[in-house]
Figure (cartoon, rainbow, N blue to C red):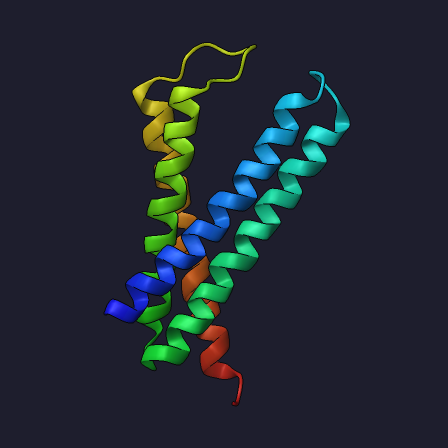
Length: 130
């Protein structure tokens, strides 16, 4: 288990960095700029790749698919928690302050995405011969 925690925190930190960079760029763009949507999709794709990589490595470390899902969930908790804190401390200027439902939803989507994509990465590691 300690290996999954360490790997999950590492993947989660990488996702936080990617999200922070993408969020900072999006915040500086004028409202309605098409580049905002492109960056949002690129950020989501990067998150999926990182969650999947964590699941792949988690399976390789443990030999069980659950290990990959655990890595994804741990990474999702870290990424979602930091994203929620950032939204709480520095809300977007054109939007009202986030409510509890927004923060819980942000955490939930990261945990669910991390667990499911981590499990998919573990499945890929299982079916791919080494």
